[in-house]
Amino acid sequence: MTAERLNRMEDEMETIKELLISTARMAERNSESINRLVERMSEATSNVDRLAVAQLNAEERLDQLTALMTRFVENAEADRAVVRGIQTENQRIIQYLFGQQGESTQ
Image (cartoon, helix red, strand yellow):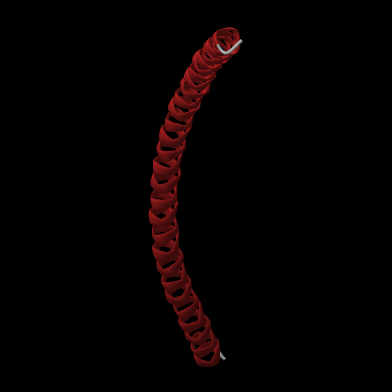
């Protein structure tokens, strides 16, 4: 019975050994997977940081474009006022000239 018991204990020890080896392999694979995930997270964080910088640059450019468009509109309105003044002056001159022409033909 002692030999049988020793054989059973050896079998159980072999089973425990196999379980430990299997567990160690799983732990190693899990560790490798975790390392890959950490690398991917690091890359994702870098990408998010680059995107945040790009967004800030785009917002700055948009602000500059908005300021430029505002100046353009203001200048266009000022130019339009000058053109209206010239048109008004031209109309007065034409009216004056036609008035003079009408007096000289009479």
